[in-house]
Length: 174
Image (cartoon, rainbow, N blue to C red; front, side):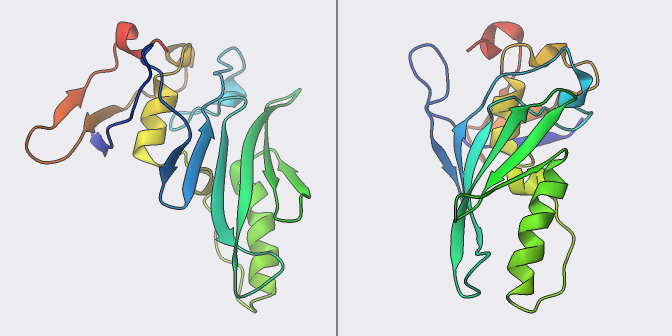
């Protein structure tokens, strides 16, 4: 099993992560809650918690020379998650996958820059591939009930003094 390196996370007296947390261009605002009863809210690689919210810098959809902040949220839909991105102007983009939502942003942002449309990794742009965010989501209550999801292993810190982060039920309750 691959062990992913993560940053140490500040926690409150109950063991919950203190939010928001900045990860480069991504600010994690809310981890949300795990919707384990509907298998469309997770797959083998990711869990898509309802209410999960980040703010990230990305190429502006209106000014080719600037970055803008986008709010990306996972909403509860009737048939599965809705990936919503609120743009710099306040308009909302909704899609059934993270990649489809971000592809719409990238299409407009690249068109004003005369750049061809590239591939969009929605999970990456949503922060789901960021190891520390993945660890925090995996620690959420009911994450272990996501039947398709494959649990990941994490190592907190790097180099000397690093320790394995064991995700056992008692430690993961927040």
